Image 1 (tube, helix red, strand yellow):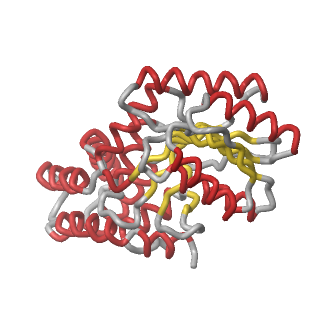
Image 2 (image 1 turned 180 degrees about the vertical axis):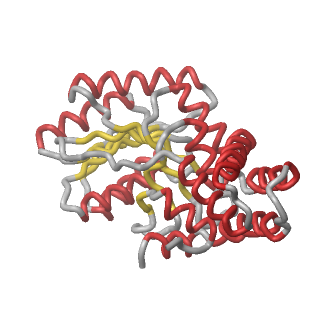
Length: 305
């Protein structure tokens, strides 16, 4: 089953919701005028794309429609698909050819951060990479134990300390061990505490500084994990974390059980950060590399030729 079929299957609730909103706009199509554009913008907002991004998309649709003299509902649909695709940053996978490639994973508790690390570890192991996990979320014993389960399942090595240890110390030990043992990829789990943004910022800064001392240039990726099923709340989480530290990629989880998947488009646009992976199911292979064209095709429910 290809990416399109997989995401279409795991993305049905969002696809149905978006199609329902947009179909009513296209069904009433007579000409492109102010009323139709307002209805299109409202449909996008209802699909959790976000008000600002929806307005931007509709303005671009109007601009291109005038240039191309768009006259049919079918042409308008294809034009919208094109603009939605262009509005998201292209996903260029992280180069992990340098040894070791260090990925710092951040996000609030409950978004699927540790699970995403486990699935990502399994992906890299299946590609023949030597993977090491770092349990730097030392504030929850359950987080350390959960990461250990995923490490064992994926065939990765995990570095851990006691609960309550300094997260930067865990990161230091992990990177030191990674260098000594020839690891290819290091994935570092962190605590997700947004109630104290200053504390979060200081902690992440300390972790990053320690990493850079062990491996110059580390971390090579700072991946923010967001729960797609929370819709507009994911925007607020992204805002908080991007203010606390530099974020270089996004992973958006739990898209299989929600009709709020349009949030992917808005977050990519508003924060100018590429979506690296999306979670479309519980399976270990259902953390999928994000492809913006296939994503939009699945959003509309069918592939383009």
